[in-house]
Length: 115
Length: 113
Image 1 (cartoon, each protein chain N blue to C red):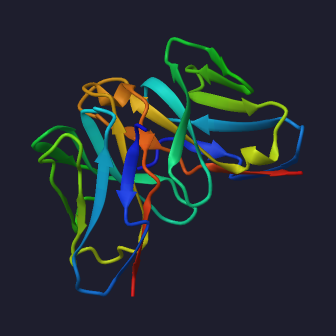
Image 2: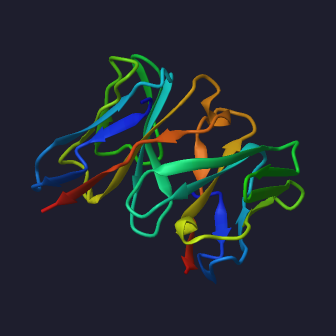
Image 3: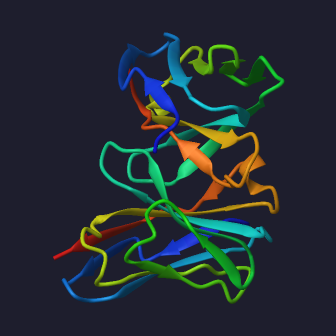
């Protein structure tokens, strides 16, 4: 099956800890994205990557970091600098350059809770 | 900032009725997309309508786009309980360095059996 997987589904973090959320796709898509969704809200873009070894900050990048060492993988690290990290995190991908014109495919999400 | 604004914020209808959701935006766009999100799940792409298109159909879904009014509507005909979800519009900017979709806050649809 082609698609996007995210793990874990639920993640609990203590204050002061860094955590890494996994996102993997086997759709051969060039572009990948990380969004944050808070209750009753739309999606806010954290980071995006249009090609391997390159990524750009989105609207709310502070306190987050990413890497794109492989086309299939785009992990997101939520650092201790992120003051309010409890949220639902969604990873997405799209077919390639000019990504703003293309539909995005989403993973099932990771719900992060800070204890 | 959120460009897309959906209305209503919440909609409750009976099975078999039609559901209409609206989306307004502020800047020129290349295309507008509609997505569905079931509770606690990822988003699923429904329809993409380009700025030079006025109407598009997919099964029970009908999307219209009025670029003069900067608005779009999503119509779901003969709704089913399985259509219960949140629906989001997202706009792709027409030009410039903006290479991201701008998302609305969504319409929460409840279809009662």
